[in-house]
Image (cartoon, rainbow, N blue to C red):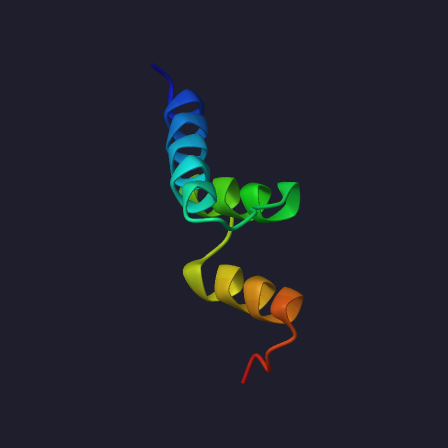
Length: 59
């Protein structure tokens, strides 16, 4: 299994778990998770994106 396939499976499993709890994970958030796991963005960048989307101050 390639790294990309492993990341896809990891994201799909995480999304399934979150959705079983009654929450929704949109495509944009899934993309951010993929980017984080592939090392394309840092954890701080991921948090900033998530906070901005949620309307929370990033500071």
